[in-house]
Image (cartoon, rainbow, N blue to C red; front, side, top):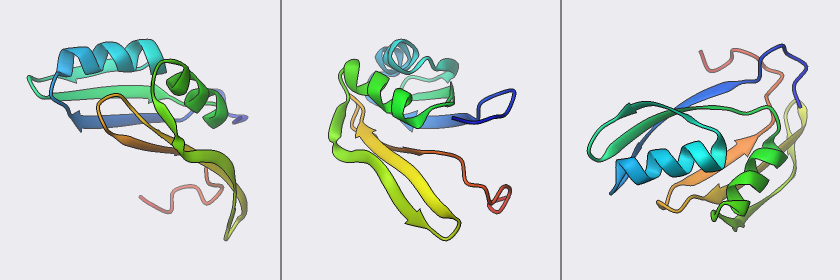
Length: 106
């Protein structure tokens, strides 16, 4: 869990067969806020403050959590906790705690 005032936000654009159904599932299962909706694309913003809880929520709502169970990985900065799931639309999500390396991807 982060110690920041606001959890990290991820913005995801996904191509799906039914954008309306995907937006509904992402909202209900992940607490996502739909930011844009096309006929075959959906962009959502998701707040992630607890990778374990986020993945558990997705699995409870019907995602397949067997592909990458959440666990601790050795990373250059120490232990990195990550796991994943496949949503009902076939997308693999890999979710982990925040890297202490900060803005290295910017």
